Length: 297
Image (cartoon, rainbow, N blue to C red; front, side):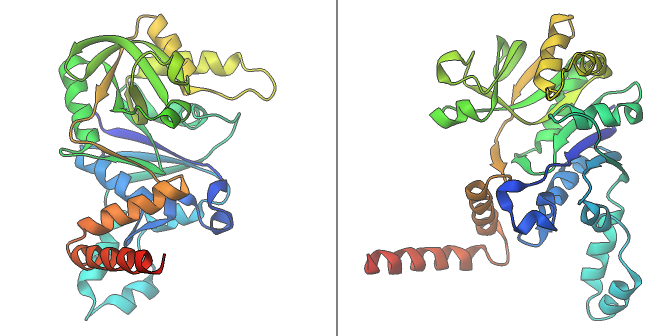
């Protein structure tokens, strides 16, 4: 049973400066929720009960968001805004939250290494606080189902075949054992199109067994000054040790990379168009705005 998750949320968000000078990038809003809340809700939907969020020095807003609302806010919402009060109260009750400040070398493996002592001897999900995959059922639920069927670790993957995708993501190679499921033998980070082992990109999230933690610690011990701790290196070492991982093409998936300005704008538009209250109005506005701009061109 998968009950724990670790969310890496310590990045500086430099692509969104000056906005992220005081606000964590994970707290940027998508409609009326911060990005990280979408991720937490999806984890909870998949059965996750305990969530460790690894933060940086300027990320107190994340802790405040998932805490009980202040008495001042409660008093302001009681009565005529009771529905809204219940919504903000429920945020703190989504899961059991623990927080850590990231320490150690740079790299996408460091938050997981920091949280290793809280994981114990059980499978867990490792994901990031500024990108997500929308799918039906949710991608975490799909990953948990595959893990429970096979007992193996699972990487969420999408087909990504634009030229610039090959310089943004890691790509997996291996044998397809079922449609959309690959037994991984190699992981290449940002390989370029010519060197990519496939068009299946590993993005956003991982479901690991505790066997990943040993290789991750080994990689950390071998770092030189200024080196980054790469999760991909640890996964490759784990595979080489015989701890197989599965690459899983998430079904019915759309990937949103909200750590990028243009992708963030696309995410707001896409989810805004799906919004029950404002979606149709937004669609009409976009059409009218495009027509008006074309007329002025």
